[in-house]
Amino acid sequence: LTLNILFNIGSALSFTADTDSAIHFYESVLDTLDQASPRFKADLLGNLASLYSDDGAHAKALELIDQAMVYHTAQRDTGSLARAQLFKATALWGLGKHEAAVSQVRETMQRTRSMHLKAQAMRKLSRYLEQMGQKDEALAVLADYTDLADSLARSRYTNGIAAAQVRYE
Image 1: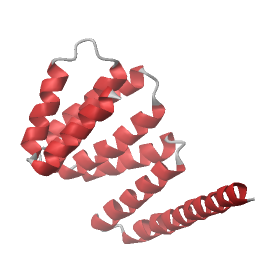
Image 2 (image 1 turned 120 degrees about the horizontal axis):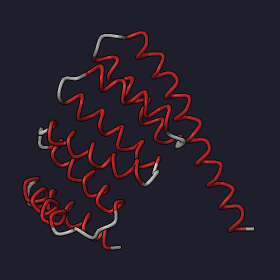
Image 3 (image 1 turned 90 degrees about the horizontal axis):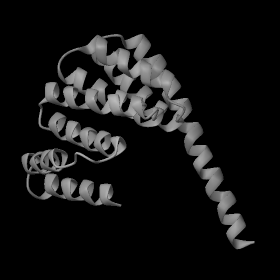
Image 4 (image 1 turned 135 degrees about the horizontal axis):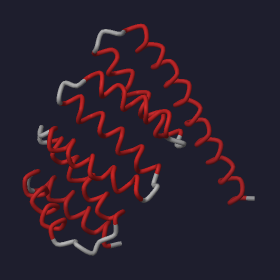
């Protein structure tokens, strides 16, 4: 609950004030959290990295997401680690390290068990490959993404129909 409240405050600051206010807020929270759980610190670092990236400070974002990934690894939180890896690709791309960004996306696709995250990674990979001029591979990845996204949408629809039948029978 506390984490959600802090994230909501930071998010509200980034939308109502500016990114710098939200960054200052998160950094001050981070400075006062000596006893916070590693998960809490990792999530806070991830949000802070995202704000820095939005502000164009990709090097700082990369530094922070690497710190968050250390916490995720120590906690054996593979889901959060995969999401952090996908964000790391964004920071690397922003720094012009395109091959490293593509490598991070591919690693995310291999690591994650979440089909939704895999779909996000495939879409990002397709965009990156297209921007790097690798059109054929980008189209192949995009086709795979479309198949997976359609499958996920059908699954959500089917689950929704089943839930509606249970409620109204």
